[in-house]
Image (cartoon, rainbow, N blue to C red):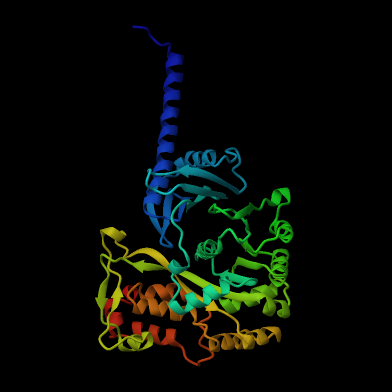
Length: 441
């Protein structure tokens, strides 16, 4: 039997050890992505702590810890993610952004794209991976979660030949999915539809899609100006984030184009204030706005374990429940990971300005006065749409309160405070809600 010289044997062992570590890291990263995908997670967070590394998944909008591993493994894990995303593995001092097509976990599952972001922290680099399920069936207008009244109003707005239709809400509130549903509704051979996005999340047949590239000078504004000369019927602006983009979008809306866009604002009325902050005059806002939709995503009760409970009387009155009608509470089972919820849907506030609302926008009226006119014109506030979903047994009151707390409640015009009264009911000593635990309602 041939013998291996000591130095060569040591090098061989070291090489084998390095290979095994690399293989183990590849297996770990792949496992995290596959596990997150099977849980329908939207994000994976790999975080270096002071003593150990933590992996958390965002499932149905809520982060949950899934794994812990030694802190000294962070460099290998981060390097593996960077290699997958074609990022510079030698750069550890600056944030990096990348993207990778991961593929299909199995032939029957959707193709997964990963949007990757790394940030240097005190204990090492943090990684966040956004999972985008590329060819998953996307919702159409009828499956956006709009109430019957809101759906009718929304359809009228999106079918308009010109104007600005804005979707607002925080990051992760489903705005992009909603505007894609609108584009899918409008997509037909007789319309020229173009988009400018950052990034392009879903590729759409029959739609001209442009990806901005600020490093090369290809900004939202540059693409929008080009579209003005492209005979477009409908233009989707992925995000109205600066004055230049906003001004061109308004100009396009006023010159015969239908503009769909997203904006970071907390409510329909807040969107008007945001447009004012971006330098748009009240006259142009009032003239261009076709409609504004504010939305949030709320968790859906697990169908296998949700339980009917009698509501406190004040809550039943606020929800408009019939005598003896129960509401549903979260329980938790194996199917939903013991959380009591499985999946999410949207709640909406839809504003279609009438003449009085536009007049108040023209005059620069206070937000409360504009809100009053919008309510009189038929706008149902966000919390009311949420309450209707609670009454139907689709979610819980605590879930609605979690997502709408701090949002303009649309109650000033009526002089009431439904949320405050319900919260008081739930936390009053000896109340049925307190005895069961308000978080389950």
